[in-house]
Length: 172
Image 1 (cartoon, rainbow, N blue to C red):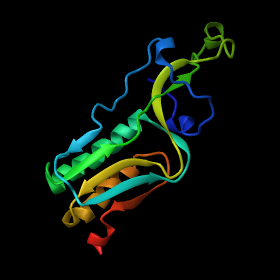
Image 2: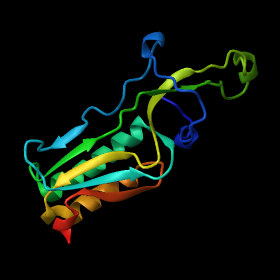
Image 3: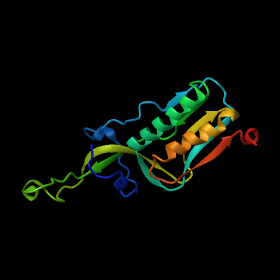
Image 4: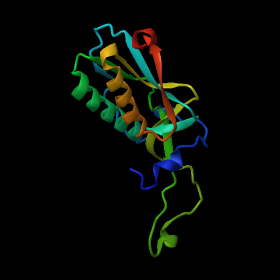
């Protein structure tokens, strides 16, 4: 993987780069599950984590957010008390022009010559107001659902807010 900080990939600076059939060696995404909990039960309340700035979210950050919120939901609500869905997919391929570091690196490195870069990871491009994670639950677990989504928001590189998509009257 990359040694550069994730903040370098937050801003959208490059053209979209998604056609994997033309690339060799794109790293696999870390997210293995996009749905958690019990999808067969009809949960009356839905909370969503909404993005407030346009940016790229790396697959490692999405996976960390997924793990944090799912772990909290399983502990507080049980496996059948919620249904969580990750609504974005990291299909943008991130590139990096790897530079040799250390003494004598100028003899090894090519500098900026042919600096298109090699694939180092994937990211999801998000728009303002786009929902990243949706969490369906019952009104009894509303406080735990908000806590789970706030734990997920701390793992993401952009400001977010929690909105009630469905069942606001049940919470009042």
